[in-house]
Image 1 (tube, helix red, strand yellow):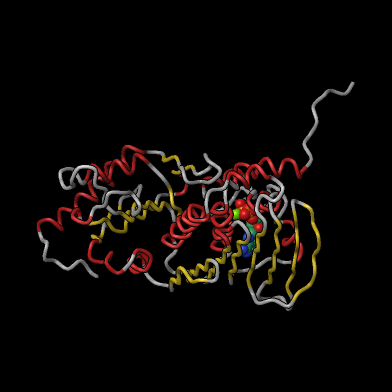
Image 2 (spheres, helix red, strand yellow):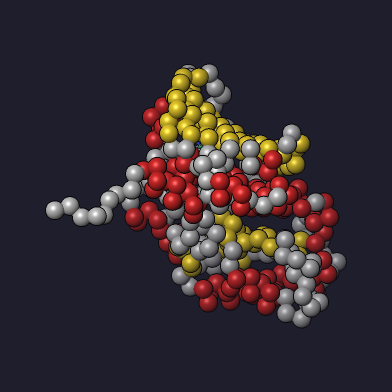
Length: 339
Ligand code: ADP
Ligand code: MG
C-alpha cells in the first residue's frame, strides 16, 4: 500500500532552499563573490544594475570549470569543496553546502561562462528557473562569469518585498566590503549602473581598510597583535576619540570570513571601558584566526554566525589584546604606529 508522502521534485526543493540562501540581491552577490574567492581569483569584478534587481554579474580570473562541472554546479548539494562530514571541521573555503548556485538558478535567469586555463575553449550555460536552456562551446578568457538576471522572476511576492534601490545597494556594498576586507590581496572592482563605486587594488590589510573607508581612516587605526595557541589576533582598533554614533566600522573576520558575534563585540567594548563617550562606537577591523576544528560555521545558511569551542577564553584574550593596544596608544600618544 502506498502512503501519502512524496519526495519533492528537484525544482521545488531548490526553490525552498533558495528561500533561505537568496533573500535579496546582496545574497546573490555574497555567494558569487565567495565562489570567485574559492576559485583562487586574483581579480574579481562585480557589475550590478538597479541594485541587482535587473542584473548581477561577477567576473573572476580564477580556475574556472570544465564542461561537466559547468552543468553540475547548478545541482543541489553539488560541491567540489567537501567530501566527508569531517571536512566540515577543517574548512578552508567559503562555500561547502553546494546549495548557492542551485538556489540562485531556481529563482533567476542565469548565464555561466567559464574556461579553465589549460583548455582551449570554454563553455556557456544558460539556466532559467532550474531549467537548462542551453550549453554551448565558447571562446572565453580564463576564469568564470556568472550573470544573474531578473531575480525572483518566478516569486512575485519576494520581488515585491525588495526594498528601494538605495537600500538594496547598501546591502550589496556591505557584502562587497566584508569580502574585500577579508581578502586584501585580491583586486576587487564594483560597478553600479555603469559607475565605478570601488576599485580596490591588491594591497595589505591596513591599506585595504583605508581604500574602503577613506584616507582619514589611517590616522585612527591602532594595530592589535596577539598570538596564543587557540587564537591569533591581528588588525586594528580605532582610537577612542574617533568613535562614531553607529556601528558601521565594526568588523570581525574569523578565518577570513566576516562574522557577527555579540560576545566578541562585548569583549572589544569592555576593553574600551572608560574611554568612550556614552553611546559612542569605536571602529574595529579585527582578524581572528582559530584552528578550523575549534569553530562551527555550519549553524546558519549565510554562515555569518559561528560557534566557537571556548568562548570564555577567546573573550579574555581579545579583551586583553585590545586593551593592551589602546594602552600603548594612551601612554605613548606620540608614537608612530607603523603607518
Ligand atoms: P559551494 O560553494 O558550497 O561548493 P555553490 O553552489 O556555490 O556551492 O557552487 C558549486 C560548485 O561550483 C563549487 O563547489 C565550485 O566547484 C563550482 N564553482 C562555483 N563558482 C565557481 C567559480 N567562480 N569558479 C570556479 N568554480 C566555481
Ligand atoms: Mg558557494
